[in-house]
Image 1 (cartoon, rainbow, N blue to C red):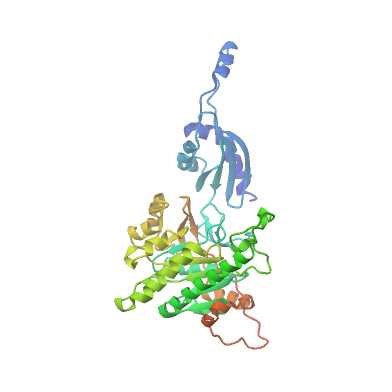
Image 2 (tube, one colour):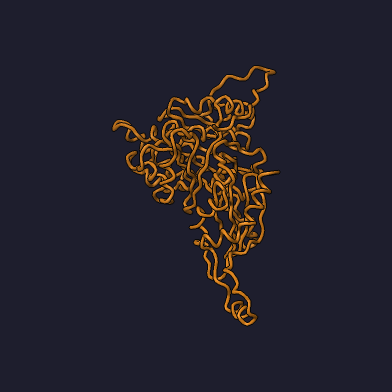
Length: 424
Protein backbone atom coordinates (compact mmCIF):
# COMPACT_ATOMS: atom_id res chain seq x y z
CA UNK A 1 0.00 0.00 0.00
CA UNK A 2 2.87 2.41 0.74
CA UNK A 3 5.48 1.50 -1.88
CA UNK A 4 4.19 -1.13 -4.28
CA UNK A 5 0.75 0.44 -4.73
CA UNK A 6 1.90 3.90 -5.87
CA UNK A 7 4.64 2.36 -8.01
CA UNK A 8 2.17 0.09 -9.79
CA UNK A 9 -0.25 2.99 -10.21
CA UNK A 10 2.41 5.17 -11.89
CA UNK A 11 3.49 2.27 -14.13
CA UNK A 12 -0.05 1.49 -15.29
CA UNK A 13 -0.98 5.14 -15.85
CA UNK A 14 2.21 5.87 -17.79
CA UNK A 15 1.87 2.90 -20.14
CA UNK A 16 -1.94 2.82 -20.36
CA UNK A 17 -2.36 4.29 -23.85
CA UNK A 18 0.43 2.28 -25.47
CA UNK A 19 -0.70 -0.97 -23.82
CA UNK A 20 -4.26 -0.50 -25.00
CA UNK A 21 -3.05 0.18 -28.52
CA UNK A 22 -0.80 -2.89 -28.49
CA UNK A 23 -3.66 -5.07 -27.24
CA UNK A 24 -5.99 -3.89 -29.99
CA UNK A 25 -8.30 -1.99 -27.66
CA UNK A 26 -8.30 1.31 -29.53
CA UNK A 27 -10.58 2.83 -32.16
CA UNK A 28 -9.69 5.18 -35.05
CA UNK A 29 -10.26 8.91 -34.47
CA UNK A 30 -13.53 10.37 -35.57
CA UNK A 31 -13.92 11.80 -39.07
CA UNK A 32 -14.39 15.26 -37.62
CA UNK A 33 -10.99 15.15 -35.87
CA UNK A 34 -9.36 13.83 -39.05
CA UNK A 35 -10.94 16.61 -41.10
CA UNK A 36 -9.78 19.28 -38.63
CA UNK A 37 -6.24 17.88 -38.62
CA UNK A 38 -6.07 17.89 -42.43
CA UNK A 39 -7.49 21.39 -42.68
CA UNK A 40 -4.90 22.73 -40.25
CA UNK A 41 -2.04 20.74 -41.77
CA UNK A 42 -1.36 18.74 -38.67
CA UNK A 43 -0.57 15.04 -38.22
CA UNK A 44 -3.51 12.72 -38.05
CA UNK A 45 -4.55 12.01 -34.42
CA UNK A 46 -3.68 8.64 -32.93
CA UNK A 47 -6.17 5.90 -32.22
CA UNK A 48 -8.21 6.44 -29.07
CA UNK A 49 -8.04 3.96 -26.15
CA UNK A 50 -10.87 3.57 -23.63
CA UNK A 51 -10.95 6.64 -21.40
CA UNK A 52 -9.36 6.06 -17.98
CA UNK A 53 -11.86 7.60 -15.57
CA UNK A 54 -10.16 6.91 -12.26
CA UNK A 55 -7.89 4.47 -10.47
CA UNK A 56 -7.65 3.46 -6.83
CA UNK A 57 -5.22 1.37 -4.85
CA UNK A 58 -6.49 -1.64 -2.89
CA UNK A 59 -4.90 -4.04 -0.44
CA UNK A 60 -4.12 -6.49 -3.24
CA UNK A 61 -3.62 -4.28 -6.31
CA UNK A 62 -5.41 -1.66 -8.38
CA UNK A 63 -8.95 -1.04 -9.59
CA UNK A 64 -9.24 1.08 -12.74
CA UNK A 65 -12.57 2.31 -14.11
CA UNK A 66 -12.65 2.89 -17.88
CA UNK A 67 -15.25 4.10 -20.36
CA UNK A 68 -15.40 2.33 -23.70
CA UNK A 69 -15.16 4.25 -26.93
CA UNK A 70 -18.00 4.10 -29.49
CA UNK A 71 -17.88 0.80 -31.32
CA UNK A 72 -16.12 -1.09 -28.52
CA UNK A 73 -17.65 -3.99 -26.62
CA UNK A 74 -17.07 -5.35 -23.13
CA UNK A 75 -16.14 -8.70 -24.66
CA UNK A 76 -13.17 -7.06 -26.40
CA UNK A 77 -11.68 -6.08 -23.05
CA UNK A 78 -12.57 -9.37 -21.37
CA UNK A 79 -10.85 -11.40 -24.08
CA UNK A 80 -7.72 -9.25 -23.76
CA UNK A 81 -7.32 -9.51 -19.96
CA UNK A 82 -4.52 -12.06 -20.23
CA UNK A 83 -2.54 -9.73 -22.51
CA UNK A 84 -3.21 -6.83 -20.18
CA UNK A 85 -1.95 -8.91 -17.27
CA UNK A 86 1.43 -9.40 -18.91
CA UNK A 87 1.66 -5.85 -20.23
CA UNK A 88 0.88 -4.26 -16.85
CA UNK A 89 3.01 -6.89 -15.04
CA UNK A 90 0.13 -7.95 -12.81
CA UNK A 91 -0.71 -11.39 -11.47
CA UNK A 92 -4.33 -11.23 -12.63
CA UNK A 93 -6.64 -8.81 -14.44
CA UNK A 94 -10.42 -9.24 -14.33
CA UNK A 95 -12.88 -7.07 -16.28
CA UNK A 96 -16.26 -6.35 -14.71
CA UNK A 97 -19.09 -4.39 -16.28
CA UNK A 98 -20.37 -1.61 -14.02
CA UNK A 99 -22.97 -0.25 -16.42
CA UNK A 100 -23.29 -0.11 -20.21
CA UNK A 101 -20.12 1.40 -21.59
CA UNK A 102 -18.24 1.47 -18.26
CA UNK A 103 -15.96 -1.32 -17.03
CA UNK A 104 -13.76 -1.94 -14.02
CA UNK A 105 -10.36 -3.59 -14.39
CA UNK A 106 -9.56 -5.35 -11.12
CA UNK A 107 -5.79 -5.89 -11.16
CA UNK A 108 -4.14 -8.12 -8.56
CA UNK A 109 -0.47 -7.62 -7.92
CA UNK A 110 0.24 -11.04 -6.39
CA UNK A 111 -1.35 -14.43 -5.90
CA UNK A 112 -3.77 -13.89 -3.02
CA UNK A 113 -4.40 -17.62 -2.72
CA UNK A 114 -0.91 -18.60 -1.61
CA UNK A 115 -1.23 -17.25 1.94
CA UNK A 116 -4.90 -17.02 2.82
CA UNK A 117 -6.30 -15.03 5.71
CA UNK A 118 -9.83 -13.64 5.84
CA UNK A 119 -9.69 -9.97 6.91
CA UNK A 120 -11.01 -9.36 10.40
CA UNK A 121 -12.98 -6.38 9.06
CA UNK A 122 -14.92 -8.47 6.53
CA UNK A 123 -18.50 -7.29 6.82
CA UNK A 124 -20.56 -9.99 8.45
CA UNK A 125 -24.33 -9.83 8.73
CA UNK A 126 -27.24 -12.12 9.50
CA UNK A 127 -26.66 -15.41 7.65
CA UNK A 128 -23.84 -13.86 5.62
CA UNK A 129 -20.38 -14.97 6.67
CA UNK A 130 -16.93 -15.00 4.98
CA UNK A 131 -15.63 -18.52 4.48
CA UNK A 132 -12.79 -18.11 1.97
CA UNK A 133 -10.79 -15.65 -0.11
CA UNK A 134 -11.18 -15.10 -3.84
CA UNK A 135 -8.40 -14.81 -6.37
CA UNK A 136 -9.05 -11.06 -6.73
CA UNK A 137 -8.28 -10.54 -3.03
CA UNK A 138 -11.87 -10.11 -1.84
CA UNK A 139 -13.61 -12.34 0.71
CA UNK A 140 -15.97 -15.02 -0.52
CA UNK A 141 -19.20 -14.88 1.47
CA UNK A 142 -21.74 -17.59 2.09
CA UNK A 143 -25.03 -15.68 2.01
CA UNK A 144 -28.00 -17.88 2.85
CA UNK A 145 -30.53 -15.13 2.21
CA UNK A 146 -29.35 -14.90 -1.41
CA UNK A 147 -28.28 -18.52 -2.04
CA UNK A 148 -30.37 -20.67 0.33
CA UNK A 149 -28.98 -24.12 -0.52
CA UNK A 150 -25.49 -25.13 -1.59
CA UNK A 151 -23.47 -28.16 -2.68
CA UNK A 152 -19.87 -28.71 -1.58
CA UNK A 153 -17.97 -31.38 -3.56
CA UNK A 154 -14.38 -32.55 -3.14
CA UNK A 155 -12.13 -35.59 -2.96
CA UNK A 156 -10.33 -36.82 0.14
CA UNK A 157 -7.76 -34.29 1.32
CA UNK A 158 -9.06 -31.51 -0.92
CA UNK A 159 -10.11 -29.21 1.92
CA UNK A 160 -13.83 -29.90 1.75
CA UNK A 161 -14.08 -30.68 5.47
CA UNK A 162 -12.07 -27.57 6.37
CA UNK A 163 -14.48 -25.43 4.33
CA UNK A 164 -17.37 -26.99 6.23
CA UNK A 165 -15.58 -26.53 9.56
CA UNK A 166 -14.87 -22.88 8.80
CA UNK A 167 -18.51 -22.35 7.87
CA UNK A 168 -19.72 -23.79 11.20
CA UNK A 169 -17.13 -21.69 13.02
CA UNK A 170 -18.44 -18.49 11.44
CA UNK A 171 -22.11 -19.37 11.98
CA UNK A 172 -21.53 -20.24 15.64
CA UNK A 173 -21.47 -16.56 16.59
CA UNK A 174 -24.81 -15.84 14.91
CA UNK A 175 -28.37 -16.34 16.22
CA UNK A 176 -28.98 -19.41 14.10
CA UNK A 177 -29.81 -23.04 14.85
CA UNK A 178 -27.30 -25.56 13.50
CA UNK A 179 -28.45 -29.06 12.60
CA UNK A 180 -25.83 -31.65 11.69
CA UNK A 181 -26.04 -34.98 9.87
CA UNK A 182 -22.75 -36.86 10.00
CA UNK A 183 -23.13 -40.54 9.18
CA UNK A 184 -19.42 -41.19 9.67
CA UNK A 185 -20.29 -41.93 13.30
CA UNK A 186 -20.10 -38.20 13.96
CA UNK A 187 -16.32 -37.88 13.68
CA UNK A 188 -16.55 -34.53 11.86
CA UNK A 189 -19.42 -32.76 13.61
CA UNK A 190 -19.69 -34.33 17.06
CA UNK A 191 -16.71 -32.33 18.43
CA UNK A 192 -18.71 -29.19 17.59
CA UNK A 193 -21.89 -30.53 19.14
CA UNK A 194 -22.21 -27.91 21.89
CA UNK A 195 -23.34 -25.42 19.25
CA UNK A 196 -25.72 -27.83 17.46
CA UNK A 197 -29.43 -27.92 18.21
CA UNK A 198 -29.72 -31.40 16.67
CA UNK A 199 -27.24 -33.99 15.49
CA UNK A 200 -27.60 -37.36 13.76
CA UNK A 201 -24.68 -39.76 13.38
CA UNK A 202 -26.34 -42.67 11.55
CA UNK A 203 -28.83 -43.03 8.65
CA UNK A 204 -31.72 -44.22 10.84
CA UNK A 205 -31.53 -41.18 13.10
CA UNK A 206 -30.97 -38.94 10.07
CA UNK A 207 -34.20 -40.16 8.45
CA UNK A 208 -36.17 -39.30 11.60
CA UNK A 209 -34.41 -35.94 11.91
CA UNK A 210 -35.17 -34.95 8.31
CA UNK A 211 -38.83 -35.83 8.76
CA UNK A 212 -38.88 -33.73 11.94
CA UNK A 213 -37.45 -30.84 9.93
CA UNK A 214 -40.21 -31.24 7.35
CA UNK A 215 -42.79 -31.10 10.17
CA UNK A 216 -41.06 -28.00 11.56
CA UNK A 217 -41.23 -26.44 8.10
CA UNK A 218 -44.98 -27.06 7.92
CA UNK A 219 -45.44 -25.52 11.37
CA UNK A 220 -43.54 -22.42 10.29
CA UNK A 221 -45.71 -22.07 7.22
CA UNK A 222 -48.72 -22.05 9.53
CA UNK A 223 -47.14 -19.26 11.59
CA UNK A 224 -46.63 -17.24 8.42
CA UNK A 225 -50.26 -17.73 7.41
CA UNK A 226 -51.53 -16.73 10.84
CA UNK A 227 -49.66 -13.42 10.70
CA UNK A 228 -50.33 -12.43 7.09
CA UNK A 229 -53.78 -10.95 7.84
CA UNK A 230 -54.27 -9.99 4.22
CA UNK A 231 -57.13 -7.56 3.68
CA UNK A 232 -57.89 -4.51 1.58
CA UNK A 233 -56.48 -2.23 4.27
CA UNK A 234 -53.24 -4.18 4.87
CA UNK A 235 -50.19 -2.28 3.54
CA UNK A 236 -48.12 -4.16 1.00
CA UNK A 237 -45.04 -3.89 3.20
CA UNK A 238 -46.74 -5.93 5.94
CA UNK A 239 -47.68 -8.85 3.67
CA UNK A 240 -45.10 -11.60 3.67
CA UNK A 241 -44.63 -15.12 2.39
CA UNK A 242 -41.53 -16.01 4.41
CA UNK A 243 -40.29 -15.68 7.98
CA UNK A 244 -38.32 -12.50 7.30
CA UNK A 245 -41.48 -10.45 7.00
CA UNK A 246 -42.76 -11.56 10.42
CA UNK A 247 -42.42 -9.44 13.56
CA UNK A 248 -39.31 -10.10 15.59
CA UNK A 249 -41.38 -11.44 18.47
CA UNK A 250 -42.82 -14.32 16.45
CA UNK A 251 -40.13 -14.93 13.83
CA UNK A 252 -38.69 -18.46 14.15
CA UNK A 253 -34.94 -18.81 14.38
CA UNK A 254 -33.30 -19.71 11.04
CA UNK A 255 -31.92 -23.24 10.72
CA UNK A 256 -28.83 -24.33 8.76
CA UNK A 257 -28.67 -28.08 8.05
CA UNK A 258 -25.12 -29.34 7.46
CA UNK A 259 -24.89 -32.77 5.81
CA UNK A 260 -21.32 -34.02 5.99
CA UNK A 261 -21.37 -36.93 3.52
CA UNK A 262 -24.45 -37.28 1.33
CA UNK A 263 -23.38 -40.68 -0.03
CA UNK A 264 -23.64 -42.25 3.44
CA UNK A 265 -27.31 -41.25 3.46
CA UNK A 266 -28.27 -42.38 -0.02
CA UNK A 267 -26.04 -45.41 -0.75
CA UNK A 268 -27.97 -48.21 0.94
CA UNK A 269 -28.75 -51.85 0.36
CA UNK A 270 -32.08 -53.21 -0.82
CA UNK A 271 -33.02 -53.97 2.79
CA UNK A 272 -32.97 -50.24 3.58
CA UNK A 273 -34.77 -49.07 0.46
CA UNK A 274 -37.70 -47.63 2.40
CA UNK A 275 -35.36 -45.66 4.65
CA UNK A 276 -33.64 -44.20 1.62
CA UNK A 277 -36.97 -43.15 0.12
CA UNK A 278 -37.82 -41.34 3.35
CA UNK A 279 -34.47 -39.55 3.31
CA UNK A 280 -34.51 -38.44 -0.32
CA UNK A 281 -38.16 -37.38 -0.14
CA UNK A 282 -37.50 -35.22 2.92
CA UNK A 283 -34.39 -33.68 1.36
CA UNK A 284 -36.20 -32.78 -1.85
CA UNK A 285 -39.09 -31.23 0.06
CA UNK A 286 -36.71 -29.18 2.18
CA UNK A 287 -34.73 -28.05 -0.86
CA UNK A 288 -37.89 -27.02 -2.72
CA UNK A 289 -39.87 -25.36 0.07
CA UNK A 290 -37.79 -24.69 3.17
CA UNK A 291 -36.26 -21.36 2.09
CA UNK A 292 -39.40 -19.46 3.00
CA UNK A 293 -39.43 -21.20 6.39
CA UNK A 294 -35.85 -20.16 7.11
CA UNK A 295 -34.35 -23.66 6.77
CA UNK A 296 -31.24 -23.91 4.60
CA UNK A 297 -29.21 -26.87 3.32
CA UNK A 298 -25.44 -27.27 3.11
CA UNK A 299 -24.81 -30.59 1.35
CA UNK A 300 -21.27 -32.00 1.23
CA UNK A 301 -19.94 -35.08 -0.54
CA UNK A 302 -17.19 -36.52 -2.69
CA UNK A 303 -19.54 -37.15 -5.62
CA UNK A 304 -23.10 -36.17 -6.30
CA UNK A 305 -24.37 -38.01 -9.35
CA UNK A 306 -27.11 -40.30 -10.52
CA UNK A 307 -25.27 -43.37 -9.19
CA UNK A 308 -26.56 -42.37 -5.75
CA UNK A 309 -30.05 -43.38 -6.85
CA UNK A 310 -33.38 -41.91 -7.80
CA UNK A 311 -34.10 -38.32 -6.85
CA UNK A 312 -30.48 -37.16 -6.71
CA UNK A 313 -30.69 -35.13 -9.92
CA UNK A 314 -33.89 -33.49 -8.73
CA UNK A 315 -32.23 -32.61 -5.42
CA UNK A 316 -29.13 -31.22 -7.14
CA UNK A 317 -31.29 -28.94 -9.28
CA UNK A 318 -32.45 -27.17 -6.10
CA UNK A 319 -28.92 -26.49 -4.82
CA UNK A 320 -28.16 -23.03 -6.17
CA UNK A 321 -24.65 -22.54 -4.83
CA UNK A 322 -21.82 -24.85 -5.91
CA UNK A 323 -18.33 -25.20 -4.46
CA UNK A 324 -16.03 -27.78 -6.04
CA UNK A 325 -12.66 -28.64 -4.54
CA UNK A 326 -10.09 -30.93 -6.16
CA UNK A 327 -11.71 -34.04 -7.67
CA UNK A 328 -10.22 -37.24 -9.02
CA UNK A 329 -12.04 -37.36 -12.34
CA UNK A 330 -13.80 -35.11 -14.82
CA UNK A 331 -17.23 -36.63 -14.23
CA UNK A 332 -17.18 -35.49 -10.59
CA UNK A 333 -16.53 -31.93 -11.72
CA UNK A 334 -19.35 -32.16 -14.28
CA UNK A 335 -21.72 -33.21 -11.51
CA UNK A 336 -21.09 -29.85 -9.83
CA UNK A 337 -20.67 -27.44 -12.75
CA UNK A 338 -21.74 -29.25 -15.91
CA UNK A 339 -25.25 -27.80 -15.78
CA UNK A 340 -24.46 -24.23 -14.64
CA UNK A 341 -20.86 -23.25 -15.49
CA UNK A 342 -19.22 -25.69 -17.92
CA UNK A 343 -16.40 -23.23 -18.61
CA UNK A 344 -15.25 -23.70 -14.99
CA UNK A 345 -14.48 -27.41 -15.49
CA UNK A 346 -10.94 -26.79 -16.74
CA UNK A 347 -10.14 -24.72 -13.64
CA UNK A 348 -11.46 -27.45 -11.35
CA UNK A 349 -9.33 -30.12 -13.02
CA UNK A 350 -6.27 -27.87 -12.77
CA UNK A 351 -6.33 -27.78 -8.95
CA UNK A 352 -3.13 -29.41 -7.73
CA UNK A 353 -3.09 -32.04 -4.95
CA UNK A 354 -0.64 -29.91 -2.95
CA UNK A 355 -3.11 -26.98 -2.74
CA UNK A 356 -5.65 -28.03 -0.09
CA UNK A 357 -8.53 -25.61 0.31
CA UNK A 358 -8.40 -24.44 -3.30
CA UNK A 359 -11.82 -24.58 -4.95
CA UNK A 360 -14.08 -23.08 -7.60
CA UNK A 361 -17.25 -21.37 -6.42
CA UNK A 362 -20.18 -20.80 -8.77
CA UNK A 363 -23.94 -20.38 -8.82
CA UNK A 364 -26.75 -20.82 -11.28
CA UNK A 365 -26.05 -17.43 -12.91
CA UNK A 366 -22.99 -18.99 -14.55
CA UNK A 367 -20.45 -16.75 -12.82
CA UNK A 368 -17.57 -18.44 -11.01
CA UNK A 369 -14.35 -17.59 -9.21
CA UNK A 370 -11.32 -19.31 -7.69
CA UNK A 371 -11.36 -19.36 -3.89
CA UNK A 372 -9.28 -20.84 -1.11
CA UNK A 373 -10.32 -21.56 2.45
CA UNK A 374 -7.97 -20.59 5.30
CA UNK A 375 -6.89 -23.55 7.38
CA UNK A 376 -9.07 -23.89 10.48
CA UNK A 377 -7.98 -26.53 12.94
CA UNK A 378 -10.54 -28.70 14.66
CA UNK A 379 -9.47 -27.45 18.08
CA UNK A 380 -10.03 -23.85 16.98
CA UNK A 381 -13.51 -24.66 15.68
CA UNK A 382 -14.33 -26.54 18.90
CA UNK A 383 -13.19 -23.58 21.00
CA UNK A 384 -15.43 -21.19 19.04
CA UNK A 385 -18.45 -23.51 19.31
CA UNK A 386 -17.90 -23.88 23.05
CA UNK A 387 -17.53 -20.13 23.42
CA UNK A 388 -20.93 -19.51 21.81
CA UNK A 389 -22.68 -22.58 23.22
CA UNK A 390 -25.12 -20.31 25.07
CA UNK A 391 -26.47 -19.11 21.70
CA UNK A 392 -27.70 -22.62 20.81
CA UNK A 393 -31.50 -22.32 20.48
CA UNK A 394 -33.86 -24.99 21.76
CA UNK A 395 -36.22 -26.21 19.04
CA UNK A 396 -39.04 -28.28 20.59
CA UNK A 397 -39.58 -30.20 17.34
CA UNK A 398 -35.94 -31.30 17.37
CA UNK A 399 -35.54 -31.84 21.12
CA UNK A 400 -35.23 -35.61 20.68
CA UNK A 401 -32.13 -35.09 18.53
CA UNK A 402 -30.33 -32.62 20.81
CA UNK A 403 -26.83 -34.01 21.49
CA UNK A 404 -26.36 -35.06 25.12
CA UNK A 405 -23.09 -33.57 26.37
CA UNK A 406 -21.53 -33.16 29.81
CA UNK A 407 -21.65 -29.67 31.24
CA UNK A 408 -18.53 -27.57 31.39
CA UNK A 409 -16.90 -27.41 34.80
CA UNK A 410 -18.42 -24.61 36.94
CA UNK A 411 -16.39 -21.43 36.79
CA UNK A 412 -14.34 -22.66 33.85
CA UNK A 413 -14.70 -20.31 30.88
CA UNK A 414 -14.75 -21.90 27.45
CA UNK A 415 -11.45 -22.01 25.65
CA UNK A 416 -10.74 -18.99 23.54
CA UNK A 417 -10.04 -19.60 19.86
CA UNK A 418 -6.56 -19.00 18.58
CA UNK A 419 -5.90 -17.27 15.25
CA UNK A 420 -5.80 -19.77 12.43
CA UNK A 421 -2.46 -19.91 10.58
CA UNK A 422 -2.44 -18.92 6.96
CA UNK A 423 -2.63 -21.65 4.37
CA UNK A 424 0.82 -22.44 3.04
